[in-house]
View 1 (tube, protein in one colour):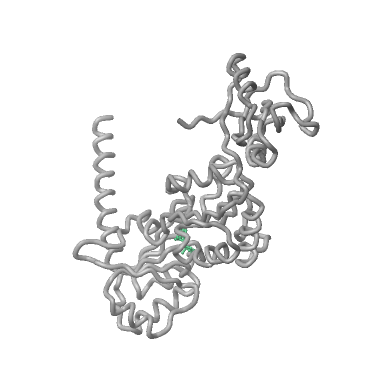
View 2 (cartoon, rainbow, N blue to C red; view 1 turned 45 degrees about the vertical axis):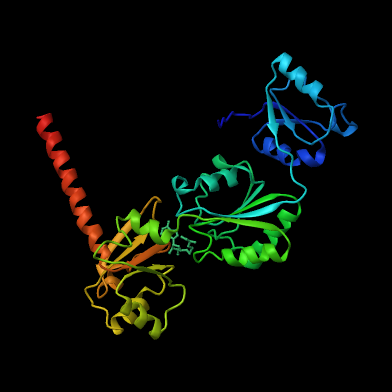
Length: 344
Ligand code: SAH
């Protein structure tokens, strides 16, 4: 069972040795509690005064003997006790795929990792609005913000490693999946090089989920039996355009707004039909989500007002979405008709 209680302003006594209790102390402070410390069963001079009757005792399992009497007294007097794990001597890093930007599409493993984190370094494309509800960890924005400079990749890696070496459980929260144009491999390598334990939790990539938000299946029986995910960060070469055009499957492009014109022209030149359907899906799962549908020959002007973040989809599957939307709209029309008939 997971229970959440508002601890704001409540007195919480955290018991256990300083080293073992440091993460619990931070978590309770972050939750707004007034934290008192008891570092040995007999108390230590630096512990300071104790509350008369704490709202909660957070008992950190520090492996030391002598705590039983205190816990027994809590039981008898009805003071609730929360068992807390001891902080490990060394921290570790978890790279977490945050999905396309909505908390709903976080994995269960991602939610758990966030809950157990001491520090979270997050990107702009990760579901960052809801982070304060998901974790009491310190939150560090390392993405681009208007008016602020983006923290460079090398600095992100240094910050992550340093925090882990201090003994923190570090979460590096990224948009989508860490291994899809997410520099996850580099961050793992940086941890390994520093001797820091690291693991990766896959996320729902925008390459599949953002088209889906617009009703576009990246594969569809008898329409497309493959999809290729391409970065549009830099323009593709002529050879790459030729290969892509020759594949005959769905093409999904991330970071493609800036090079949309070159892509459309390159694929045309490589022999792709000008009436090949194409979609631009902006801000998937976020306020202002918008889909622009055109074809290879008209997309450059149709998408002139489109901006990042956006996923481009090129292929016949775009028509499947249009057909399905037609059905959905027809169904909605029927519903409205039925409602008005019943109402009248
Ligand atoms: N690792 C990420 C991709 C990082 S590259 C993933 O697996 O999804 C960043 C690009 O992802 C953006 O330029 C955009 O093309 C795409 N993207 C991520 N989230 C998006 C969203 N909510 N809506 C539209 N595009 C998105």
